[in-house]
Image (cartoon, rainbow, N blue to C red; front, side, top):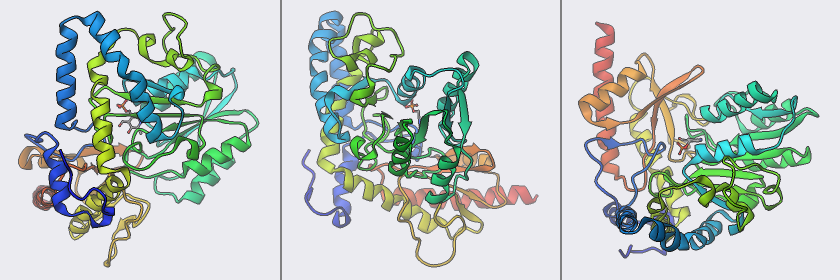
Length: 411
Ligand SMILES: Cc1ncc(COP(=O)(O)O)c(C=O)c1O
C-alpha cells in the first residue's frame, strides 16, 4: 500500500489520505465501533500475517514457532525500542497491559509497612493487585485524593502531600481509560526520583496514540498493550524495565532456565508456551504505524474527537467529562487542545446505561458505559480508520436516542 502525501504536515493531511488508511482495515460490522480504547481491530496486513504464521505453526509447531517465528523477536524489540525510546534489552513482550502491570506490581521487592501511592482512577485490576499485596504481605497502598477533572497542579500537589518516608513505589496511569485525562507523568516521575521512589507508568492508552519516550518520562517501568493504538494483533503487550531495575524485579512466572538475556525472564519462554503467530503481526503493525507517523496519528485522533464533540455539544444537557470545558459547554469554539482519542460524556437527565443500550440495539452504535465513583457516562473512542461521516451517523443516532430516552423518562 502506498499512502499518498506521507510527508505533508499532519494538519494538511487530506481526507483522501485517511480514506486509504481506512482501506487498510477490515470493515467493522455489525456495529459502528467507537470503543477502540478497549481493543482495536488489526489492519488487514496484520491479520494476514497472523493467519500465515498460524498455518506455518500447524505444519511443525515446535520448529516453526521456536526456531523460525521467534527468530524475528530481536528485530521486533529493536523496532519497538526505537518507538518508545529505550534499549531493546529493556523490552519484554507479553500478552497485554494487565500482565505487565501484574509483573511490576508483584515483582517490585517491598517490605511489610512499605507504602505505594495509587489513585482512585487507576485501572481497577492494577488497584486490585496492590490491594492483594496488602492482604498477603502487609504492603500499604495509599490513595492520592484528587478529582478526575482536577488540573495538573492539583494532581502534583496531591501526590506530593501523600509522600512519606515509607513511600517506596508510585503507580501512575498515563491516560485514564475512564475519560481520556492525561496525567503530568513526567513531572510526577521527577518528583518520585527526588524521593527515591520507584515509578510504574501504565501507558495502556498512550503508547502509539501519541509520541511517548521512556527516557523522557523518566519512569522505572512502563507497560502497555500493543492491541489498542498500535494495531498489533489482539494479545500483545510490552513491558519496559529500566536497565538498573531488571535484576531486582521478580518475574511473574519463574523462568524455565536462566535466560540468555536478563530481560527475558519477563517474557519469551519464561511465560510458558504461547502463540507466536500473534507476535508475527507486530512487525507489520509497526510498519503501518511508521508510514502514517505518530504525530499525524495523534493529530487525527484529536481532530476526530473534536469533530464529534463540536456536533454533539448542541444536544441539550450535553456534558463533557474532560478537564477542559467540564460541565455544560459554553457557546464558542471548543478549546480541545488536550483532547485525544478517548472522551466521556453524559446528557443531563438521561440515564447513560439506557442510552448505551438504545444506541447499540436501535442504531448499531457501540460506545461504552463507564462509571467510577460519582462520574458516569458514555466513553467514545474512534480510531484512525474511522471517517467523519461515520461520526455524523453516531451523533445523529445520539440525538435520536436522547429524544427517545428522554421521552420514556417523562412518560
Ligand atoms: C489504563 C489501562 N490500563 C490497563 C488496561 C488493561 O489492558 P489489557 O486489557 O490490554 O490488559 C487498560 C485497558 O483498557 C487500560 O485502559
